Image (tube, rainbow, N blue to C red; front, side, top):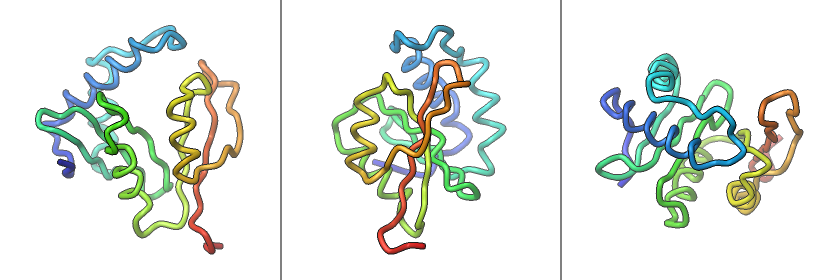
Length: 140
């Protein structure tokens, strides 16, 4: 089940982000839900945000103005939901970009399978991130 997020979903989205960050050894200072909730609230109206599950167990945030996938977090990777969300993001678009941690090899491999290519590294971020881009075949 995938649906458009509502503001009532924001605490669940923040929990998913924080749980994921705490599980990553390369993230030295994981976020706290009290800090993440206002960030999601601030971006909510400008983004297309979709949630999965009942209760919410994943989400995708897309900035349509920039063509940027700002977040895909799933508590159950490997179920096909990530591909479904990526396909939703690609629908009607010719270009998308996102960032991924180099240490997140599973996500990096997933995005490559979905047609994203490494565009650049952003070493100034802590930890460093890589920018990946997707362009629809034949799009200029």
